[in-house]
Length: 77
Image (cartoon, rainbow, N blue to C red):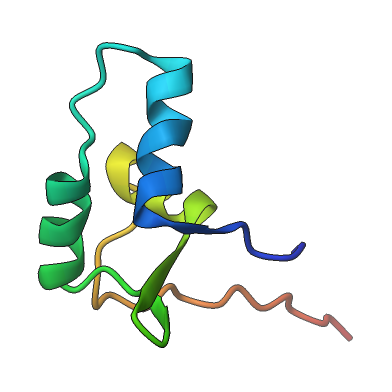
């Protein structure tokens, strides 16, 4: 897994606006996701969002508070 793409809330909105000018993703939408448990990193007053994880959240592949199950490979004798 590579380095996380950490972005500010404004940068996340800009990312979606560049790809879809008619997007409904707004700063308020992101704040509500954070209030509902979406994980963020805080650096002083700045809120940093893992962009890839937020995209998973929008696709329904990530649910805040639900831990992903780790996949283990089985070693056969």
